[in-house]
Every structure is written in C-alpha cells, then in structure tokens.
Image (cartoon, rainbow, N blue to C red; front, top):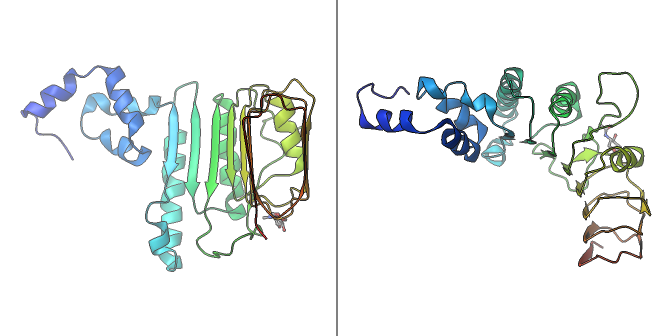
Length: 262
Ligand SMILES: *[C@@H]1O[C@H](CO)[C@@H](O)[C@H](O)[C@H]1NC(C)=O
C-alpha cells in the first residue's frame, strides 16, 4: 500500500518524530510493523530498530491445524519471516525475543540460530512458546524442541546468557543440567516459567545468591521432586502431577499455588 503523495495523512505521518513512530511500531505485531515499512519511505528501515521482536504466528493456527499442507506452508512462511527480520536486524541489542508458533525439534537448527542471535544481542526476555497442533495430546513431550547445551560460538557446552532476566518455555525440553546453568550463569534472571518439559525430574534450588523471584513449573510429566530453600523467592506456582515439594526458609514468599492433577 502506497500512501497518495498529496494526501493530508502523508503530511501528518512525516511529521511524527522517529521516537513516536518506533513506539507505535512496538505496539504492532512484527508482521504489520514490517508491512508499515512500505507506507512511507522514512519508516522503511525503522522497524529494524525495534528492540522487542515478537513473532506470534499462532493466530489462525487451530483453524488450519488439520490441513497439514496448509500448516507446512504456514511454517515455511513463518520461518522465512523470522529469518528475514533477524537477518537484517542492525541494532546492537534485543530486549525481547518471542517465538510463538507450531515448531518442534525438527526445526532445532533454526531455533538454535535464533537463540544464538538473541544471546549475541544481549537479550533480556526469551519466550519460546511452541504449540502442537498436529498431535494435540496433553503431556506429550516426544516432539519437543530440546533446549541446546551450547549457545555460544565457542565449542564448550555451557548455556551462558548473562543479560537474561525472564525465561518462558513451553513445550521445550530442558534438562536439570541446563536449568542449573541458567541459574548459575544468568545472575539477573528473576523469572522462570517452564511448561511441558520432558527430562525434568528433580529440581533443587538452594542457598545461593540468587536473584530468582518468580518460578513456575507447569505440566512437566516426569516431575518427582522440587526443593527450594534459602533465597528471596516471591512466588512459586506448580501445576502437574503430585510430587515431593520441599520449601524451606523462603522469607519473601508471597504467593504459593500448587494444583495437583490426579
Ligand atoms: C523430550 O523429552 C522426552 C522425555 O520426557 C523424550 O522422550 C523426548 O524424546 C524428548 N524430545 C526429543 C525431541 O528428544
């Protein structure tokens, strides 16, 4: 869509300062923000400076979920768009990276790449929210994306995201070792939410100079025990099968919700 050269709206648009335009763009899903680039030449490259990359492609997914051809085409489009935006992103920082779509471990190379990009850009919030429209079954972790044990360009097997503050994972397999590394190597990490992870059986978070304030474990089917003690946790939410819960010396705990699914 090109705006008519002589129209009043064009005059108004070009008068907006870059700051305001960037703010408006932040409020739009990325798809529209990219399209906005074609409205006015001045805007064209502005979206590349967005600090929050929110790729939510879940909109009409449930409607097309039974048509695997359409779903595959949508997947290709989605991946193409994310790669396109990330490939030409030129700001040194990304505040948020949100990936909301129907992707699984078959797409691990791509997802690993997006995460590496985010780590390099000093990301503060990572949200990987994968829906499974093909299999539907609750508690099915078989196809989950496995969170990688290395995100650095060096070869060592260490998850190290020093800038990270918030981590939300849905239908992503996280091992205890990886969770441990998050807690050790992301000193500013204050929110962790893990939904539908395989592998996770025991969690022990205790007595370290931790910044973790909000912790949520939701429907992780192999969970057998959680031990939290001696740090400044503010809220803990658990939903899932019954397990051994051990909470001790959490002086700031204000919110505790446990829903056991029998
Ligand atoms: C995710 O974890 C489960 C264990 O709960 C495992 O069976 C499954 O194979 C894992 N997914 C992948 C893609 O490796």
